Image 1 (tube, rainbow, N blue to C red):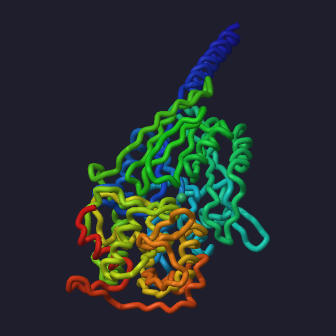
Image 2: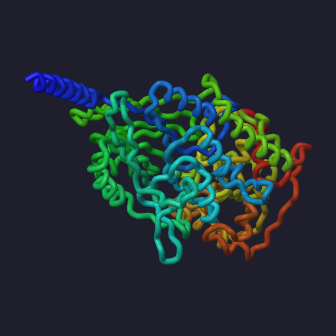
Length: 511
Ligand SMILES: [Zn+2]
């Protein structure tokens, strides 16, 4: 009898603790995702006021103190474009995004998906090196590596072992009571950059397939989407089941709700970040999401370790620029109007940044009938507002290059305009133009209809004049002349797009 009573007590204690465990296990689990997207700059912009990955590192640390269940996620576009990317290191290799990888490693990034700009790197071997040098993990469900006829996953070296970049990961968080939530993370990128070594599976079908798998493996699903916002909205409508799309590609902050899916994008170059605080209720399997946009500015202290890495790269890069005769930190203009330089804009329509540069061409080299600038020479893929430094011009035109003067028959100029303003829309060969209009299907130059038999003076980048731009190869058959320098108001301006833009914008002072 006594034994039975003892047993009963033991059973009761076991049952009580099991009950407590069950109650604890049903307590909500909180976790936080720090989001940033489209980052090309390791250091702050606008004269040090805005952005900076060392400040983002501080934010990550603060969030970790608030809740150890915190991860940082980057929604693509970081290995390029950057003026630093084109500079050569002491070993002769181009930097090609290493400055970003090392700074992001220091800043505590956990996961990233590919953006289209990761595939700007022409050499897949260099991309492979950058992936291997990353301490954060890559995820993509639709970008694959193509080698000959074979299409395989990209790979990443982790702990000395080469592993396939996964289509998804399940990241587990637990609360103090030991209750767990499984967060499914996948990534997707738009098929924008067509390098031979990349193959893109369709976005919707790929993400649908992954969600099908995640439904049994995860409690909360999050997709890191490097897509244009309209595609994000369509995808959220077509494939319901994600709590959040951590978006990229668009460079200004936005937030939408499509059914049960929140879609968020922060500003490019970590001018802002998104902080997503999730609460998961195991009992009801419900998720509550609270997303806030945080401005990254000089009120946030730098994380010293991250700042040391960023400073080292920035110092090296500025030294190379100074050797080329530039003063990267010198202020040249204040932009009161946003200077439009995103790839989407400069490759599809005339923008004020294109217009200002072409006015610069005309200021140093007046008297021509037409001025042209291929949009592919503008690689900033961002807008600029506020303080404009020489560095901003250098990062806008990372390739630089001289401008040339050509005498073109009207017939040839007509072909240039047809290719540059019609055929090449959406490509780097789309032209920013000065003194050109299209009316009733005809080209007009300085207010007069283009005449096939007339000869026109055209000023354009040497890159285009020598036939290197898409659909404009025929220009190499026409003579082009080039001066090493221009003299304007007793000033000598080196014949380079960057020097011309710097000179002209400094004369303007404000815009
Ligand atoms: Zn992009």
